[in-house]
Image (tube, rainbow, N blue to C red; front, side, top):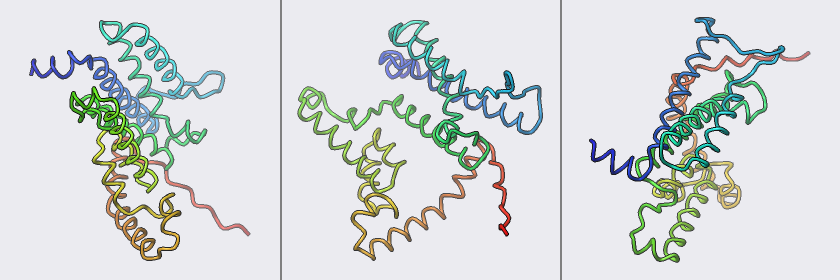
Length: 253
């Protein structure tokens, strides 16, 4: 265990990244526990207000991110200061991304359906950083040999090729596969060779005059969403809390 720690974490200089990831996840978990207690009216916690203004925790999150980010750049990659800045940065990112949906919609949608986007962004971010921590690098750079890395042409071709594959998966409406495919190109390749989702740029461009392809795309998307939307929503509810029910509007007139 000690040899693995030294070879894979300490020697490559990944300790700050590990500290940032741990503080990021822990901050998000603690924040969600506190907000759920506030929502339920339990415990000593309450919303922070100043002059009638609700101070969302994205505000201290931005401050911690700025301090931790600039501090890590100024202090280098080693020593206690670098580790401390990594912790501050991870805490700040955890607070900011916990309210990602509020920033995206410029509205307090924390406990609405749109608020699920914050939970999804946090889980995707944690997974991507975890993959980098395990040794994966963007666009398959870690798969290149020493000779290929020294050959700039081969390295650039590999990076550009993997980037285009991820871009193709994104154009087919496979956003999650494209994002993870940046780190693990095989994932993006799966999204690139499969049928595009209906409504995606690829489907609008190439399925316009192909009714069979449109029908297959719609059927596959329906089956996929029916199979996975339920478990994904349950997982998001377990992590971040169930959103408030959407109020039904009475018909006008």
